Image (cartoon, rainbow, N blue to C red; front, side, top):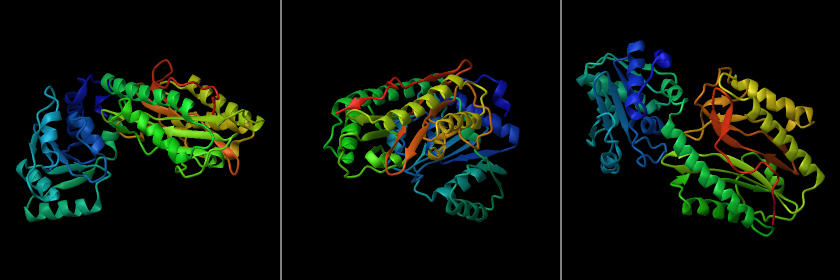
Length: 381
């Protein structure tokens, strides 16, 4: 992409400029954006999107105009939250079918090539095609193939600061939970306390639906909290995060209720060793799949290779899963400025499992975790 050697202003002004440079490079007359994470990134309107996949908004970007459509539920919030020092959006809440609204913008701007996101719904696409035909506004519609998502890989200083703050809430929650968890509580009770603490201590929302698992359930990487009662000797795994000004944190810690058994220490130490070796090797330019392979090798050498099957890490930002990845199929270099998780695990069916997850910033010199919680195996209860 053409912006690799160009310096852009921070925030929404620079982000819109990057999109327009892409348009010029690719020959796009207009770009349509509906994904809410992309809209949050482009507009800077924090506290406006609810990320429910309802897709109530649409933006059309041309070389010299910015159009933004919403409805009456969000119009006042946009007016209040669009940054004063950001680009000027022509905001409206016209009562109109959104595909028709987009078609009208295409006709009004005489755009001949419209680029759309890969995630555009088929029903929206067919509605747009019908609208263009009704208006006699012929336009070639092309996919962007994740271009905006790739722009979002490298985080600016404001984004990093928001994620550091989100993680500070998440770390504080772990400290609190280490004093709360005990035998006799259910997984659901632990989740309720965990999420309540984050809301009471500065979180705007949850980064995702919290995972709390105990005993044999910890062998299920994405276990759903249940009514299972925690027993002495159980592992308790918590995978959770806070959302702050629309940016997310992500952390997993596994604790043990009472003195751990020998097998629990062995599994925990194996996962910790894999985690810390990856963190020591990660830096700008590493290939994502190489980081996955490193963790797999360490865990396999300890005899647990059959019990670690998920990806090692993923990007985090406005979305909880973004580019880039520390995963088997990610064969690209990870750039400085990316924020990625590091979360190896071992899961023994019928016994229990361990995951240890930090997330942090990839730099030219290494990996800087935002996470501050200990890597030691914490004994609770």
